[in-house]
Amino acid sequence: MLEFNVLTVFLLIAAFLISSVKILREYERGVVFRLGRIIGAKGPGMIILIPGIDKMVKVDLRTVTLDVPPQDIITRDNVSVKVSAVVYFRVLDPIKAIVEVADFHFATSQLAQTTLRSVCGQGELDNLLAERDEINDRIQAILDKDTEPWGVKVAKVEVKEIDLPEEMRRAMAKQAEAERERRSTIINAEGEFQAAQRLADAARIIAASPSALQLRYLQTLKDISVEHNSTIIFPLPIDLLKPFFGRPEASSEAT
Image (cartoon, rainbow, N blue to C red; front, side, top):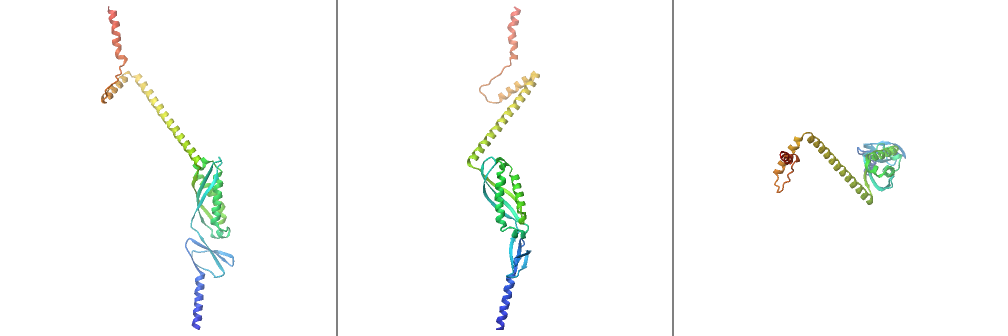
């Protein structure tokens, strides 16, 4: 009977120790309440709790990736779009994260959704598409300020996707095509203008030196002779025919 009592006491002590000893990982903290009053955050490692008196709530200190679902947003220029984002945050103060807010994960998620709608709805569609970095910084600053009393640090916010209506996509495609055609026309006109300038410069050089025209003429004949052409258009300068035009007048004067 005595041995049975000793074994029972030993088992009770073992169960008491097992229930009172908790192991926390390096990235975990335990917020301990004793008779309803908070006594601090414990961990990492082994901590001892008083069964029936102490209660512990674990808090993960690692960075959490929060996926913000697509939000229906109407921009300042009355365009309806759907915008989704991703938020990276972590707990800096586990006591505030447990005491100051009921569920900091859910609260941060709801705050991120409302802030995303508010910030994106303040700008026009072109700004929303072209200035993502500024929008990300604004959302991150607002979230970080609002979650600071909860002991939560919002490290980064990224707008992930902007879903446009189909008719808006077609309109933007037409606009982009028209812009490419405009640039192509400007480039072609600029090329023709530069070519005309070069031709005008060449004409002035040739006009200043008549022998340059003759050399160019001979060079053209050389280029034509290389190709196997059945018909050759042979330009003849008028200056070469002047002696022939003057001979009949000279003969008539001699008579």
